Length: 471
Image (spheres, rainbow, N blue to C red):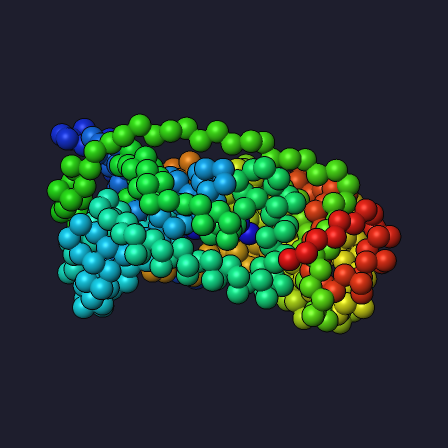
């Protein structure tokens, strides 16, 4: 639904064959933001693969005596079987509820005792376990990651607790107009595709998930040859790799089933849905169309374009709808990039009596962008923002681990982080123009309006055919 610090990277590559694993060693040089060319901190970047297929990435980051570990499994809610939506999510949530040697309380006490953190997550494309601690506790958290990932017991009482907890959360979110809009928008945008359903599932689907299905999902997806392990921090790579081999070397590989997904449907014209919530005096507005994949060759132009359109207080949407017209307190846009086409969407809200006027202004801004493009001043401002903020996203071992594992998971180039800032700076006006023509499609849009239907129905019908739905 709608889951290295300040860097300039230079890398050389050397391949060494070891038994029983293969290791690829690279050099990274990280430069702090605002530092001159000579003030560079060298760091080492290493990749390895165990015989069981587990991919390993290690980055030395010696600024603090801290280490972060992330284990990513290439299975998320897009892998949920039909009518079993929420299966991947509930599997992820149950990982730390108890293993063959520790119960949930013991896991929590162990991580708390060392002052660390341990979290689980599930998005559409993957599931993950992330942990951080002082580097002196590295072996402790490495063992914990291995145990919760590989040996959960999925007790019936824990399953029922998380099932009830998630259902309660879904029912409570029916009072949240933003959540309601997101759910209906995804359903309209993606149809029969798994991206259409909430990653946490639905009330109906969660009730149908059995313990046997939970165990089967874990057994068939949580495999070393379907996983990536990243370690970032104040580490010695040789010792770290030896510890990983000792901890994960006996993890048995399995047959990874290829995920075959339906195509993402095309949108023709305006596809409008009003979700009737009679108690609302403000209308939630969510509109968009399919965007791009995470590995799209126009990723950098798209990021800059989105900043210009709807990110921050100087964006076109915010300036036109908030600053000039005073119709809302917020308007933003986003490209949610996934393994397949994630959604491009714009979100805003306004009083019921001005909701359709606000919607028309948003559509007008999209058409202007499509027809007239951007100015050089807008492009330069967008570049400055990303050049200034990228280092802030690479300050901690956990942040670095997340960036590195994304690079590996989405099959981005080996020099992706090396060239990140260069790629931002290199985007030209011609690149932006090409991207606008290829990506933006203001004539074919899904529009979701959560409102008191009687207040906006007649005005909405002037835009096209309107579908009326209940919550």
